[in-house]
Amino acid sequence: MKTKITELFGIKYPIVEGGMAWCSGWRLAAAISKKGCLGIIGAGSMTADVLQENIQKCKDELKDIPFGVNIPLFNPIAKDLIDITVESGVKIVVTSGGNPSLFTSYLKEKGCIVAHVVASLKFALKAEAAGVDAVIAEGFEAGGHNGKDELTTMVLIPELVSRLTVPVVAAGGISSGAAWLSAMSLGAEGVQIGTLFALSEESSAHENYKNYCIGLDDTSTMLALKKVSPTRLVKNDFFKEVISMEDNGATKEQLLEFLGKGRNRKGTFEGDISNEVSIGQCVCMIDSIKSISEIIDNLVSQYESAYRNLSNFALD
Amino acid sequence: MKTKITELFGIKYPIVEGGMAWCSGWRLAAAISKKGCLGIIGAGSMTADVLQENIQKCKDELKDIPFGVNIPLFNPIAKDLIDITVESGVKIVVTSGGNPSLFTSYLKEKGCIVAHVVASLKFALKAEAAGVDAVIAEGFEAGGHNGKDELTTMVLIPELVSRLTVPVVAAGGISSGAAWLSAMSLGAEGVQIGTLFALSEESSAHENYKNYCIGLDDTSTMLALKKVSPTRLVKNDFFKEVISMEDNGATKEQLLEFLGKGRNRKGTFEGDISNEVSIGQCVCMIDSIKSISEIIDNLVSQYESAYRNLSNFALD
Image 1 (cartoon, chains in turn green, brown):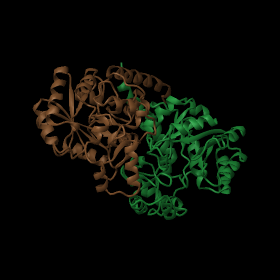
Image 2 (cartoon, chains in turn brown, blue; image 1 turned 30 degrees about the horizontal axis):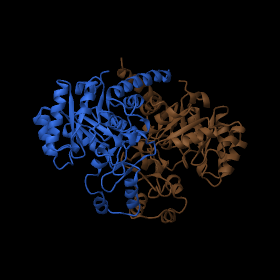
Image 3 (cartoon, chains in turn blue, yellow; image 1 turned 60 degrees about the horizontal axis):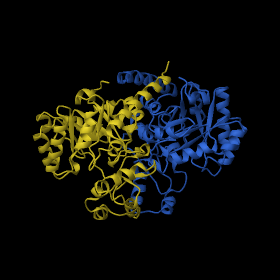
Image 4 (spheres, one colour; image 1 turned 90 degrees about the vertical axis):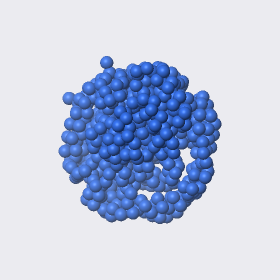
């Protein structure tokens, strides 16, 4: 399959790993890249040193096989993370959660391919104007931090495809070959997958987190913390406290004080599943922890099967 | 195109009209049915007499061409509306917003084909157990009243397809042939379309409503009123009042008192666009008011075009 995204990144399948804090370490990124997709190191939960180590291990493991680094621009050490990434010779950078005009020109000057994560047309147009090579358009159903406008993948993708020149990667809710095909039907040139990869053997998330998440169903998550930064949370005790505060009119400051620091680390990386736990809505489709190799083989065979099934629905 | 939905309803294209209060009168339903899709009279905003008149006009206009009636089960006169529908000889009934076990057996005894609108797996399984012939699975992006679990079309459809025996009709966010194809890729056997039809020439909504809505963009709507009944609202003055109350911790009772009665009628049917105005997220894709004939011709040609485009993305 050739798409603008396979061509841009030099990969076999137009599948990009979501740059997930506490999940997307070098093991996961390398495993995904080895299967012909684009592995991404999620720098959001790393210090500059830890990022450097992760990049080096990916390079050792992958040689010439491409991989990238995701850097959330709201991160206080974003500039350090970008410097390390560039100095380490990484050639693919995904930026998210901030203004794409901050670093895109710099990264392009350094010879990087740059994609930016967006959640509405306005920010997609800003990213395009800043010179990105692609946008990753993330719908409301996605896990983690989320846009303020709550646009779903089904609405966001065709809207962006109709208005942008750069290729669009669809993100949010993609956990099967059928959903991947569905995104391509909407005009996406590729997909970003988070949840499904977060629950793989190679993900650096804690086993408690993975085992808890594979037991969840379609009603297990909800977007919350909209006054702070919209985040898709699993409905555990932590979530219930947040919602109770929100329902009673808690201010942003009160919520920030309650949140404190390091909660996502505790839930995802340390395995305290009564703390902040985030995952995408499509977690309902995942009921076991598999290796990346098996997951990507499944995606490919599901895609082929959905594609064949669609031939029953030709119009003529 | 043959799908389980075209076969079930005896229609050419697997497209079902959303049963929209104040939009889905006999003119819209008849126009849609005449184009080979399934027109649906939205009884939710009608008295029994008005429904009877609408059914009669559809019958006069359509002769043997199939059409249906949508009845929201939370409506205090739901039983009257069902009686009129059955007595008038309508053979296709869509129920929504309530318990499918209430009337499904009765409707089936009377020879009706029954579909029920759901927004999560739990309610889909209930509908299937109640004996419905199909479920209409409506995602978070849809206009009007919405499920409590905020599942998007991209997540809800594959989940239901994998767990149900009855065919699934995808609803929410479908406003183009590409989105229709995307839903079929997810395993749906058909789509329900609301927003696009609500803004057609034949829709009984007020011209002010239609003209206002075609000027909206992707960030113009938001789900609100979650303590009362989740409703997708346009961000006008009415919405701002609702949000201000919600942000300050208003109770369900306070919100109900503020809402009073007839607000949806005022916004949609009387054209007071500072009042309650609801439309789907995909309104961002619609910039003019067209006839149903042109809209459905466009959907078909867009579907064909998206289908052809997908042949570039075969895997082998």
